[in-house]
Length: 280
Image (cartoon, rainbow, N blue to C red):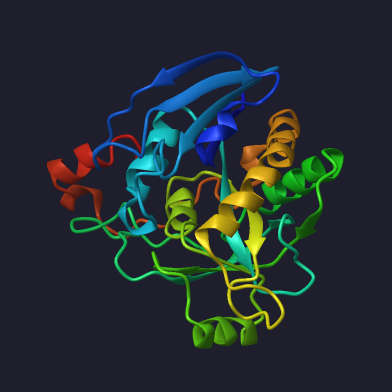
C-alpha cells in the first residue's frame, strides 16, 4: 500500500477527503523531528504530514533537524516523499502564486548535516537527478488536474538563510539560469535519496526575490500573503497526487544504497549499526 510523506506547512494536513487522522510521535537516532507527524488516509493511500518548521513556525531553516524528519517518514512507512516549499521566483514568467515542479538543485547551504553516513561508514549515493522523474511527472499531472498554474522543471538554488539574499547575490543566481530560490530543500533532497525515498518538490513562488526592477523586494508579509492564497490549490494537488502515486520501484531512489556503501561490514561498529538499523 502506498504511503505519501509530505513535508511542508502546518495547514497542509487539512485536506478535504482525508480520513482517520491521528498524531504520531516518532523517536529517531538523530533526535526529534520538527513536530509530531499527522497520519491520515485518502482512498487506499496513507498520508503522513510533517510541518517542517514545527507548528507555529518555531524553527528557522538552519535549525531544522532534516535527518530526523526524513528518518521519521521512513520509519513510519513512507514510500514517496513530497516537499512543499515557499520560494522566490528567479524568472519573469514564474509569477507569484505559481507552482514549480523542480527537477534540479544547487546546494549553497553551509552548516547543515547532509548525510546519514558519517564517521564509521562511508557511502556515496548517486544524485545526478535528485528529483524522482516519475514522482515529478505524477505531481505535474496532479497539478494540471487540480487546475493549478504550474511550471514543469527548473532548478532550485538553496541558500543558508535565514536572511533573504542580497541584490548582488540574487543577480548572480539569475545569471546561473536557476528558476527559484529557497532555504529548506537541502539537505532534505540528499537525505531522501540516502533513505531510498522517491522525492519531489512543489515550490510555491511567493515573490521575485530582490532582482526585479519593477517589483517590491521580498518581505515576510508578502510571502505569507501569497502563500495563504496558494495553499488551497496546493492541497488540491496533493489530494490528486495521493491517488495516482507512481511505482516506487521505478524511481532512481529505489535501491540507491545497493552499491553505495564502501565500508566493509565487518569494520562497522556496533554504535554505527545501531544508529542505521532503521535504514540498513
